[in-house]
Length: 109
Image (cartoon, rainbow, N blue to C red; front, top):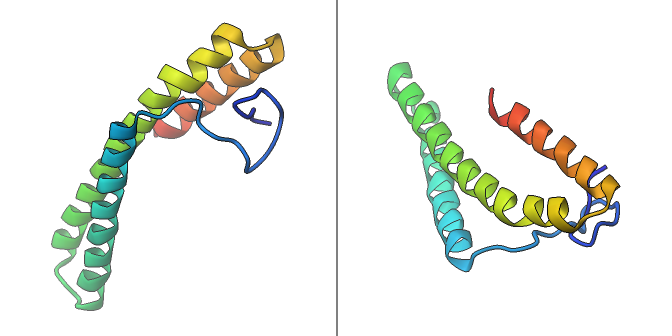
């Protein structure tokens, strides 16, 4: 199980330990732009556009999502992971190591 910012085991109540407001705003702008790109992809499919053109746009969306992922991972390492590893209990530290390994594995594909 993952840990909350207070070190207790939980589910949906987990919150980030620290989020830079500028990074948050930047991620939200990127995600809104990606949302528009995905709607554009839907239109392209509905309109039977050329497959190579659709695939090019899919690649563009994937790269935009990777940029958001990098920013979120950087924030997670800077704030959440650092706090858990510096001040957490042995169980908190082990859980953070497992979480980081899972995140790296999932995002390395």
